[in-house]
Length: 190
Image 1 (cartoon, rainbow, N blue to C red):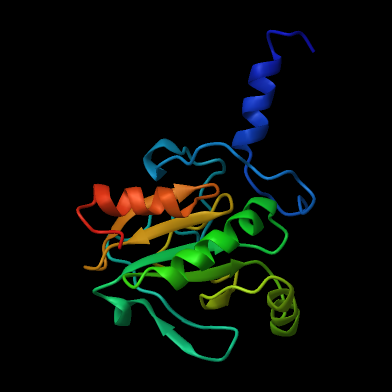
Image 2: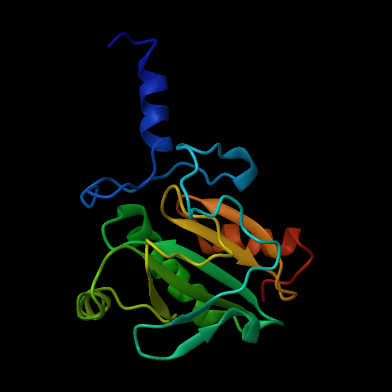
């Protein structure tokens, strides 16, 4: 490979994101991009949601057997994080999302495991990688209808207290970026 092509090859690798089978991949450190800047990587398939609703609805059962309804969390900032156990950047952001959920009274996190995994396997995984926020397993063949089908992981949505999507992040996100997005949307990250 010529030296002139090396930067482009590295950029392509960083933008590839997490795909199944990359469990041992190095953590992705590329900056996150807003949804508007991310072009679709595959043609639309029947049943795939192409755009997230302005005020998305989400009702799921968490791995601990509790019902989670996004609408019941109005008045809070909610971080909806699509992730998978095989995704190295997803695992990289989990401790920080957990700390954000535990330390901020007005910010909550819900993790949506976007993969084909059995409940007992997920529970075992969470014993090895505990988090303070609830986790739900999402059926990849029947994902939540109000959220765009993830084309890469992690995919994170910041939902404002009024229920509207304030920001979308593709790739790993940290607490500082979430707090900046809250401030930019007119909220307080305290």
